[in-house]
Amino acid sequence: MAFFEALWTEARQSFTPWVLLLTVFAFVLTKTVAIDKPRFKAMFLFIAAHLAGLVATAGFEAVHSTFADITRTPTWVFGAVAIVGAGATLLFSVLLPRARLHAPLIVQDVVVGIAMVATSVAVLSRAGVNLSGLIATSAVFTAMLGFSLQDVIGNIAGGLALQVDNSLDEGDWIRVGDVTGRVVEVRWRYTAVETRNWETVLIPNTVMTRSNVFILGKRQGQPRQLRRWVYFNVDWRFQPGDVISVVQTAVRAAQIDRVAKEPLATVVLMDMTDTFGKYAVRYHLSDIAVDDPTDSEVRACVYFALQRADMTLAMPAHALFVTEETTDRKAIKTEKQLQRRRALLSTLDLFAGLAEAEREELARHMKYAPFAKGEVMTRQGAEAHWLYLMEDGQATVRVSDGTYDREVAQLNGPCFFGEMSLLTGEPRSATVIANGEVECFRLDKAAMQGVLAARHEIAETLARVLAERQVTLQAAKEGLSADAARERANRETNALLTRIRAFFALG
Image 1 (cartoon, helix red, strand yellow):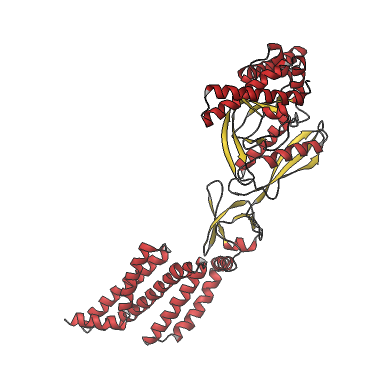
Image 2: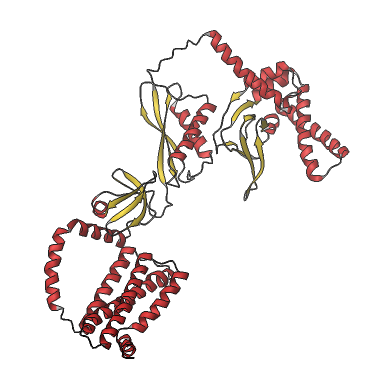
């Protein structure tokens, strides 16, 4: 009975009711709030130490042992420190987050540490412990420890400075020396940086405070994006102004993921050599983590833009060609290209009514026009008097009403689009965007002019094919009967024929 009486007396004197209340509070927090696990474990450790000291003190007091005076003071200290830890958890894990305030981890640790030291000193003073000698001794010990741990203390001070002045935030991309990566944590001793190679580099905080730290893509009042440079070389057969115009137009129009729309991408002539000019595409990357894949897509866009403009990337001046480019070899290459184009024309119903010689004539005038993923092949409202013949690949057709942009169809090669612009001069009715690399040819008005001038009746064949395509879609949507569809197709054919003849001045 004496033990329980002693236990109750000691509990009232050593804050135990508050400690037990905090234990329940801490248990509830683990179920409802995400809290700092190391600090939470430390708080439970102090609570356990307090309860163990309380039981030991009560036992010694029950048998009238002098050890009770020795264990009582640490028990009080553990209880007081546990209360401070619980209060810090409530403040930093519950109250401040609800007020949308975030205290840096190091600042939290400093505040909690100071509060624990102050509380411990107060409890020890209450217990009658003389601290004057301890303070004098600790001053000498602190001086000796400071000299031996200069680097550690420097790292701690550096980490505290980084946290307090908000110069670095978690998630910032930085470059320090030859290390580039994303800041994931600023600790007492080091700053943890994750690189793109799935490495975590621990940079001492003294290095962070003494070195030039580049925070990538961060500018006050601007979105987080980083300017990138993609270099390419083009020989002097092509004027710099033409090269810049072709590539810059293509990159700006392309819908490449992670390429920012503002500021606009630019192309500049960086240097001049004897045989070629060195150019660079400058664009802003919106997701700094994905740099090389985005550069790759921009390079593909540059390559295909140059291909469509019949421009070629420069080769080194010392390149050696061991294959003799004879007349026969050129003829074979030309015939293979024509055969490829004829095969494409023969698969498309628009040209089914043409004679073999007429398809041959069109094949000779077809221009190779490949596209990279994300490039805009045609844009709604643009005036362009040519037709695209897609040999292979896939593209998305989108239509805008000025407010909303929606997808209306998917194109799969072999197919054609832009026929109304070629045959009647109408502006583009939709925007077509390449979903991947697209093998494509372009057929312009001049080529069709020659074929139509030689045989006027081809215009009627083309008009009928286009009218039937349009009416077939309308009939499916509106549920037209066969007779109604046939009658509408005849009207559409006559209307289209009139416009084709007027556009090509056939008379």
